[in-house]
Length: 193
Image 1 (cartoon, helix red, strand yellow):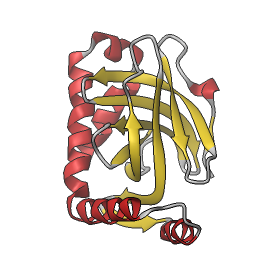
Image 2 (image 1 turned 45 degrees about the vertical axis):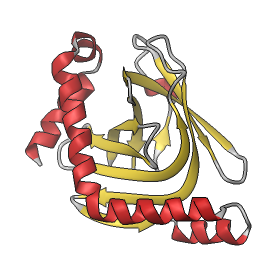
Image 3 (image 1 turned 135 degrees about the vertical axis):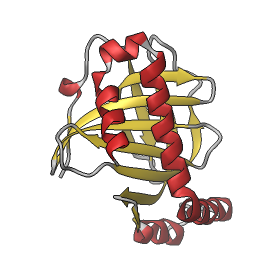
Image 4 (image 1 turned 180 degrees about the vertical axis):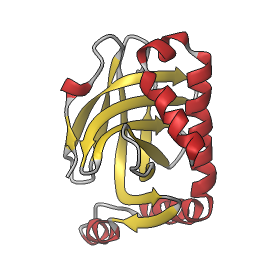
């Protein structure tokens, strides 16, 4: 199991909160480092200790998309770079500035894991349970199916987009180069793939 701790965050960079709202009204709040705030996307870094070693999880949030991406880059050689897509709605990034803020969204249960290019859908039983409990309406179910169809066909394109975004941030930002050596390492790992 993965261990997440705000003790692993860099205190010299701005922090934001990822606010994950669940269908049953639970709310998870995760403190993250702000990597970039662009007009249509926010990128955060969340360091964690995974079962296979230390990992930098880059969360990429777009308010107009029906999914987010966590791009998990191991800090030690040999472990796979993985990506996880969460199907969602109501993603909000408008409160994020260089001073902090929060990213929030409603999680619609379904996740897609991609490891070494191999996709695997997860939590389908949770979607069915939420549907049976009346927590998902017809619009949410249609959104889930459209997103599943899209990501089944296009997950590789989105992962390439995330990798290009991380590489671009690494090249363009002096602050990121000095404060987020993790991105340079992430880009190095991605170039090896």
